[in-house]
Length: 567
Ligand code: ADP
Image 1: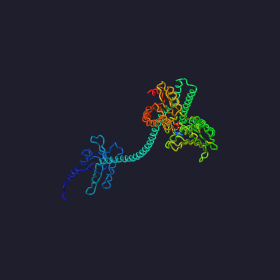
Image 2: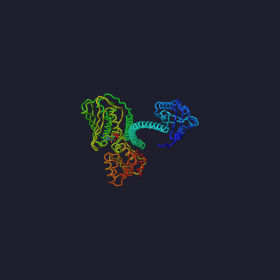
Image 3: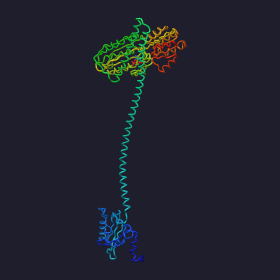
Image 4: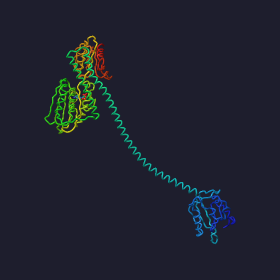
């Protein structure tokens, strides 16, 4: 085979090889015998400053890295090559390169391989040391490892965060649910507060009216007294009116105080051992006068049994008196009321008191509601009978304080009512004192004499009727009165008065109906004046629609009455 390169050029060939080569002698100093251009470039050295010099004197370890062991590793590898005459591949070494200006080292990583160069007779001429600069690779690997550990810890964090998010969203769900419940509760409170505010407003309007009625009756009585000295009999009647109205006012105020005490839970029962028969007797006594006035008869059925219990006698009497007063108020004159006291057959140890009337009755939809405060079957009419809608609420509260129950039964309007109280016997229960109600009145007198007119007064309240009669007569008018709607209509048709003053809340047919029928029969000959305790726009327009010429709210002052008659 031909020799293409002359032996004398081998040095140039070696130095120009595209690799990082060094030749070291196998002597104790590992003297540098040759170096490739690329090695010089990689290590920033000049050939003449390193040729013939000890390897580790030229390339020492970086003194700034005390744990550096590259020179030791290289020395051991070279020793192995000398010993074995075999090539020795070293692990990657950190072998920092001194900077050209001699000021410090640059970090470098190398992958070295040492191979023996043998002579023709097998002797070791030198050791060829070749390195690959793997600094970039090592950096990338380190960077990658770093990134990986970051991303691993990130993904571990992610898992934890996900778990936490799930947990938090569960908590959030629960909180939302609680919030929803709280919101619903709040809306319910708001609704109840609004209802309560409306009830209170209605109640205040009603209360003002109820207080005004007895006051109006008394004012009228006093004014009548003023007009001319009344004779003895008249004085007695006027005093009786005032006495009754004072009683009405007192009962009204007592009811209000009682209700407010029960509402605040400020009721203490004075319980004693008592006989329910005595309670029945006392309650009947309390309403005797009222029953007399309404021309009602009362019958009682008291079973022959032991009705001993523990209770507050004043309050239990109040319960029965309220029920009896209602029976009277909502019955037509001449009606009958029955009171029964008997053991409850299906409930040993309990007594039942039953108050039954044959009066107006209660529609099915109202049987339960009437036990709420201010609820009335027909507020316009019922209030005219002298009620605030408090009585039954008091009854139920007091009975409940005694551990008992009360309920109403009725076949409907026109079929009478039955109130049933059940109380435990000789055991527990009871509240305080109280009152009931019967009737309230309104009257207003005219004064300055006008031309004598034929006047019809339709008013079921005796005091109010009497006052109007007296005042109108005192001014020279010819006055006729009627007690209920039917009688009023009859008289209106018979006498065809100049003016008819008609109350709205009347028994039999109410004032609206009376006006409608009267208009249909007598046309506009008679002037119709509606007289009511309610001056609301709705009532006014209902009155005009029914055929009234005008609507006057009670109390109608004498001046107002005079001006109505002067028209
Ligand atoms: P009031 O003072 O208006 O009578 P209550 O609370 O005693 O108030 O009664 C509430 C309503 O129940 C009354 O306004 C009336 O409409 C109805 N009521 C009570 N008792 C009777 C009855 N015996 N017959 C018919 N309706 C009655």
